Image 1 (cartoon, one colour):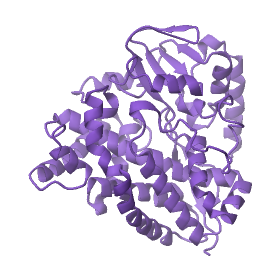
Image 2 (tube, rainbow, N blue to C red):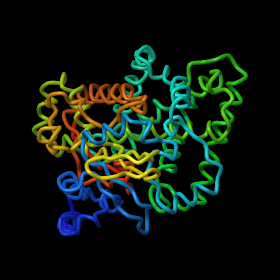
Image 3 (cartoon, one colour):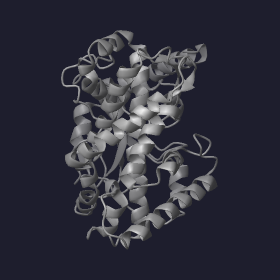
Length: 424
């Protein structure tokens, strides 16, 4: 790690413990991009686990929920904590921008019964039977990706591996042209990045690219609604009784959800696994010596990385929690990234331990009705890519620290410079 990052983290830690608790604000992208947010969450879990941050320059006021059990209680109580106002802590600027366009609802931003009906339409795509059918496709593509990597030359793991595998899988799920699969990655990054970060140059640029995405998926809908039903996500929505009459904005919202959901979790965990194993070489040695640890390693990485840092809800009525009153209409942020490091629930939570008991005991996929619909597909991709990695490469070596995503929502990597010294 460069000296500037070390200095930043040390200064951020000192500030986190010196700031009056009522002024503590965990929603700071600069902290996340420098991996310097941990002391704030440590302090909030200890001193103010149900914490109100008043309106500031960037966000409206919101409650931070930082302990594992409290997060799970909110995540499983959709009657009191609604998703209908969105599942992300939106900046004031983003909120003002979104009000300029017609707003649709994806099923993750809905409550029952609408949520259940729409989710049921697409869930067969990631059901066990379909995952079994997809497994050889993912494995073949993973092999091609890994066999194309340079040996002894520095390259960006995010670009050549993480993005490639997730884009291929997404294109398969949508039956989107494979030769255009990186459009899906690009659009995902456009949707999740604020202007000035990732590929997003401005709000106008984001609008322009959102329209390009929607035009492409409108064309797919038009093609598939008049053709025999197939087993891809667009065809499923176009033919299912519950979704074939979706408004354009609701359809577009579901497309955005499926693109982001199918991209960020898996992509950032693939990158995170390489980073974590390099930072914990003893664990990397254990994995090489015993590849049967791959499923454990995958779950431990999903916890340790926490690829989506938070989910948000809106209180539908006043609710008492931890001695605090959450008022009707208040925004409530469940910080998964903090709950996954809660020492009262996870022994030695800051350690990366691929032999951890109950490694799937994490919050990264959420709980309740909004639990990630594609969680098994994410785990499948991660297990396959690591089976294929260990069969080919004795080591993937981190060259220097990654560039992290500038976001309080997507906790990921923009670049991860590595070198593969030799093949097996």
